[in-house]
Length: 348
Image 1 (cartoon, rainbow, N blue to C red):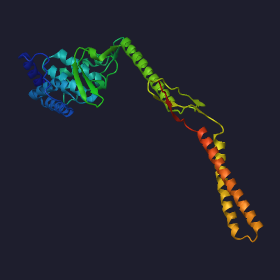
Image 2: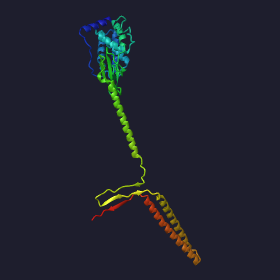
Image 3: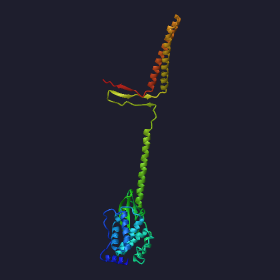
Image 4: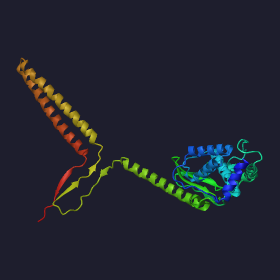
């Protein structure tokens, strides 16, 4: 391990400076991330500096390409190995920042003796950041987290709903859509929450009040619409008299709707007419039966009596028929829905 550290310092002295990052050329999957972590673990135990540095550079450079939800534990391991990559490259302060990020997620982690000697200075540097890493930060006063519509935020794999971000270490901020796809990834090194994800409490209150007012107005309109629809569908009570005035017209023939007056005599007249019609039929039937008696009588007196009875029945049947037609006509007239009458305007 001492040989590994010495080689790292030589690389640093030869000019490997700064926070090197590879450009994001595609998606960095969770499997690829885990694979790089495995390579760095094996390289650290085998003192394979070239392999360790290559995997570390790739791991850090591809964080912004992590278009997949990553568990908190995996982020903790990734941050720890990126810190080790910087430490072994001679960038102590950068390494300490990444160690703090890792310990914030997994404060109980201890290096395995197969990975790092008990006397290795990186172990001591890592432990020195433990107390600082677990200290709670302060949320931004008067601000709230404002994720894009239809999405949520994850900070280092954790739900990010409060405007609180420790400022002395790197963080990975992911924007996740409702379909669980990763829309954006940010690597934040200064602890400053991007402004597009912040909203003042006063602005939030104003938005909520406006949304509430709009919702109330929408409900009110919907309620009134239902009332109007109900009125339109309800059958109106029949008016005692339906009136309509004929509009003045220059035509010679105007259509006039006659007023209809509701009468209580309608049903009795129709019923009486029906009864009279039945009675007429019965009387006519009796007259026919009486007429057949002409052939069975033996005397002139009996013949005259049968003739008189037949004539009386026929006359009664006729009177009943006339009464039926009259009462039926009157009843129909009283129950008419309004007749159409031609009104002639004749001018000279």
